[in-house]
Image 1 (cartoon, one colour):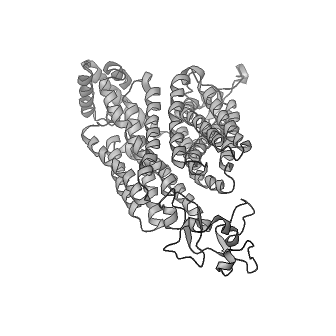
Image 2 (cartoon, rainbow, N blue to C red):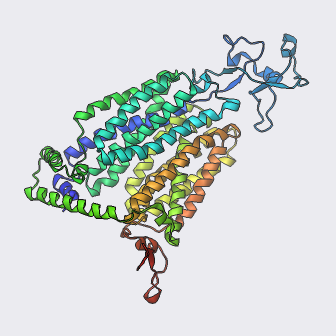
Image 3 (spheres, rainbow, N blue to C red):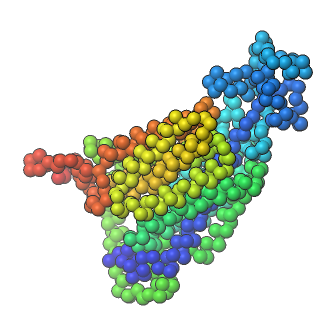
Length: 552
């Protein structure tokens, strides 16, 4: 008897669970706002140097006729376009500007002021703090540090939720998110803006992951695949709604406030969302857990036999004794995964899969401004393709197998993104189509890798393995903003790099064993033997050294 059996008596996904689950899915929308907001907050419109004869107060991007650009700005040998970070050091008289030959005799000067194209974006943090030319890395660094915050938040709020409880951690992270979301909007300089966004990034882990854990802890085993995938669809809805906010709100500061304030709605969850009964039982707070179980049983119109409560108390006490004994033994570490050859190979492949999936997913999500065409439409499509991607998982994951979906989706993403190399310049719609097919495929792959990883690692190091994999994934997200800067050199370049990584990861993942309908490995020895083509027997049986003792 365990809490899963209590769920069976309650109903694996009864009326009570459905109501709470829906409420817990909604914060994913706001977390998507914050994770994708950088596309618009840090939008980089077309720009050019403010020329000496122009007045900064009245100059407009389009006020310099296109035929005069070659007279003012040198040609960039890499991109083949005008280098709008410098201008010719000449006297810009009417006679010079009416001519057709540029004068490069006095060399060029670097820009000190810029004029931005306001046809698509009224302003952004980039235009306010001139994060262009030699300062262009600043915008990528800001997005990168946001992902550093996500990494830190997974550690900080993960520990808080295990020690203080799911509910207090959820509200603590929500309040911090609201405060620093507003601070980011009124930040007077780049430094305070970036630090505020870093803290907001950390809180997305607290809000989203804690809500996800509460939701998963209250549904039955047969519904966990659906519950885990459906919550990601709410994130995709938030993805698309972000473009709606950007369509109506053109000032970046008001946009940041508008994307933050919906979080206030979730403060009412204090009276609507219960603490996790699983967590309460694990902490010996049985009476509180039983009140929640009884409330759920009443809502689902079922009765929980009284002997179940007595058995839960006994099991909680037994688990506490086991935990105390386990605490006295050496704890598992990531080095246990790297100590033995087969397990090491699988671990490194899984780490690479997580790195690629995260890097490519965020790289494509944040790259919509570089694709050409209508940037808002590109962004909405990039979010919309995630819905069929997750729906595909619901239909195929338990039928076709984890490895087949993971490898197949990464290979499809790799091929579709690499095809952008041969797309003609006058067929930009085809480039966008290839990018969106790649986004759909990598979304399915990203949704698969978590389940696949949990089934690959042995029980004794499963949490360690998942934590290490998640950390590696964050590094992919941290590097993604810098990758997108390469789009200024050649539009398909970020897509080509993402495609090469996806294709490589997809092919290498064929070396991993399938896990569908296979018993999950329990010990290090099981993990080392799992997936080997040939298992030795008799005197040749593999012995894995654990704590200095051979175990067969």
